[in-house]
Image (cartoon, rainbow, N blue to C red; front, side, top):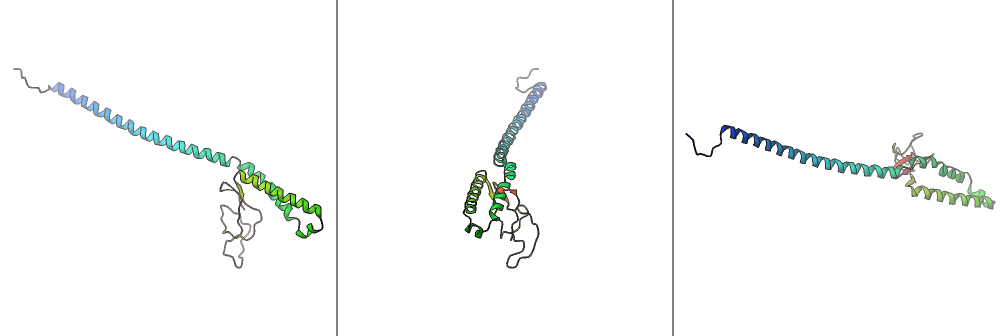
Amino acid sequence: AASSSSSCSDEEEAACEEHRNKINRLYEQIEAVIARRVDVKQEAHQAAKRHHIELDNASKYSTAKLAKAFLQVPDNLQRAADSVKVQDFEGDKDLRQLNEGLLQMQKVVDGSLRKFGVAMMEVEDQPFDPQKHEAMFAVPMPGKPPNTIFHVLEPGYTIHERTLRAA
């Protein structure tokens, strides 16, 4: 006898269950794709951020090798200025003019270096920092705390806060 109830046959029930399982798997795949999309967006954002930092650093520090080689110029200008004593200027007008030109050249060179972010370190009476300084010797100095720099043999330079040449 035939029944008029609306119940599904076992075959239909199995087919419905199979469709429900497929739908659930598709929902899981959609959720996985959405999660992966979020991850990819975050990775892309981080990559763009790293790229921006690398470009900025490349721009800032691209001149570092040239600047380091160029430091011989201010070093030699300073040696020339230090080689003449004040009393030598008194009787020699030409020497005085030459020294004035030398001082002007030092200002021009210093200004040019500063335009590219290169600056001389002020290290005298500062605590020794191995990241910025090279010690030739360590001697206790009366009236100064231990590890204080009291004499600079060769000035150090930074380029955009990064050590270019240790003092």
